[in-house]
Image (cartoon, rainbow, N blue to C red):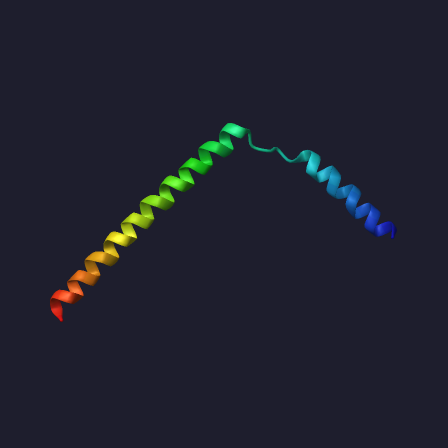
Length: 59
């Protein structure tokens, strides 16, 4: 039981050392992720469409 209590005390101590990002940093990072995800989804969709149409022309 003593080891468990020591573990949780150490967890609390380590969590106090964490530097959490500000709200602005989280928002800007989220925007970057969303924009890049949408960009690559459109890019891959376009490549898929072109390959599909190319295969239709061949067959």
